Length: 434
Image (cartoon, rainbow, N blue to C red; front, top):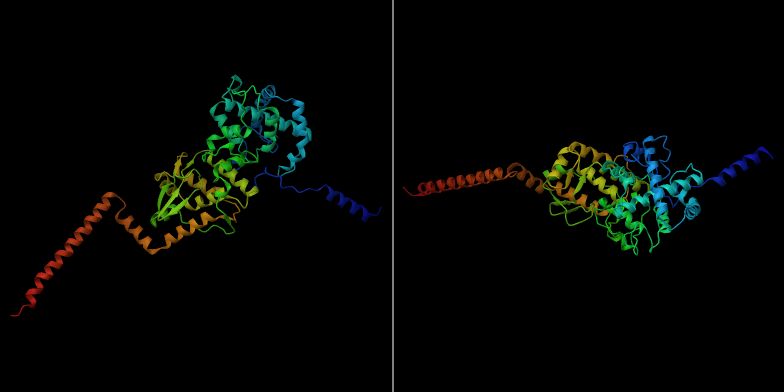
């Protein structure tokens, strides 16, 4: 065989083995480095690893402590199932190729290692959700029920890099529990679906009060679920997307000076439902707390990777980024009840909001927000509105100042009337003949 033929064969073999890194099945991603390096702690699990991306504990020794508890829960899970370990292994063996395609990077694991990882992590999640749903806790749970640890576990289960495909865990649940028997269920004739268990476990984030039994909710993993919790539902209620970047928007302080009034939107259950009518900008209440940065960063990262043309959370973050520039903007929104500041420092809230949109690529935009920005900018550029706002600020900023301004105006009018009357008294004498 000639040298030329050897090179051809070698290249052909390389091409035969190559596969696309990201396929249509991919839904779990490594956070892009341009975003991840800004706040690595927001994407890295604190106490528990789920899935393959953070399974190598040599880089995160603190995660090793939870492996024993995962095994305890997995053992308890196996003791309450209607299935056998062999049946579960057989199922997972059959879906390994599909499982690998769900991840954005090549998984450096043998199939055997992946089977063990999927079994233990899925069993832990199902057992945890069951105990939370049934409030069926034992002495084994004392450590995991410590408030700080329980909170961190819930947050870790929402990180984009820390996921198992939902269909895998759901299928294992369905294999293990029939609709007629379960040692977990209080009602032996009715077992909740795994989606119901998931909704119950993450209920504290379900601000829009979505229900799991409508049959129109399909999720890829838990990060995807949190995003759906924040979106307008159903799908047809979501604004259309336009291929247009966001316009510049004035900050809260500037809008206030131009005469815009701020009000809490209490009519809508959707956090993204901003409205501007007349001169009133209505914004749903947002609680800014320790977990806020983690939740929004992971939802934005998911949209960057998986929903670039449906990035509604990113749209909302972009609007907030323009509205809030300084601690003064935060203070105004807190006074209006739009923001609830649990971080304490107003500047910290401003810095958090301003960092969420950094290094984010944003092309398609929410048509509703686009119209809102146009209306607000048009309002602020109207000289009459600026004049009215200036008068309100300079002469009517408080009840005492308003009363003083009215008194001054009345005094000016009375002085003018007195002057006119004096002139009228003098004029007749001047025009009378001598």
